[in-house]
Amino acid sequence: MKATKIDMQRWERRMHYEFFKGCDNPFFGITANVDVTHLVQQTKEHQHSFFLASLYLSLKAANEIKEFRYRIKDDEVYEVEETFGGSTILAEDNTFRFAYFYLRDNYLDFEREGKASIEKYSQINELLPTEGLTQDGINPCLHYSTIPWISFTGFNHARAYKIGDSVPKIVFGKYFKEGDRLKMPLSVEIHHSLADGYHVGLYFERFQELLDTYKLV
Image (cartoon, rainbow, N blue to C red; front, side):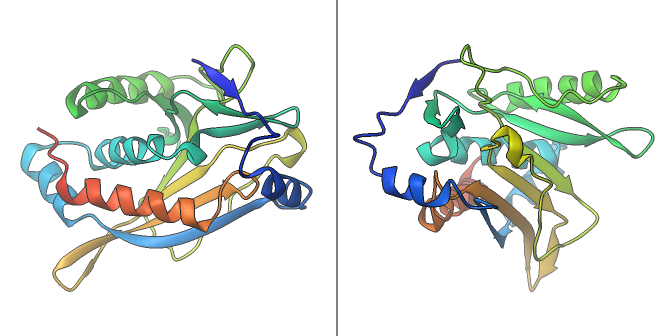
């Protein structure tokens, strides 16, 4: 997978990068509800995985926003060509494993490969936190988790600051009924040197558009 180094002298975020990179916690997070009424109806009608459908549309939205594809390595910023999903999955002993999900041109291919990935990694008795690094050793994935037991209103992640973590993290919560609509909590954390609230807002907006209009089949 290709990663292109950003020309820091011409980068519009250079001063923001310098401003935030020295923070003890350079990440910021936003949690809000998205409307999943249309997606739930589709997954139930056609017997698809709600988790994989949510993940697919989220990846499509995130890949359209370059700030979600920025990564930091050795105090340099890179833009990866495409990002994919690395998500926690529940194992039989109620611990978790990491599985990986790659964007495809249509949902049916993505779901088929996604189910195979869940089956594969759930049987591995070790944690494999990275896959698909670029030739420069950059982690192009997005970190995902699902908390289907809680309709949370906020979320904080464990972070590995000492190794220069710059991967955005996205969490889906338990969807709930609000009037005649179904809402799902969505948490996004992203490195403030690489993105602002405006860019997270673009992601929420695009994700909601896909949730409202995308046809799985």
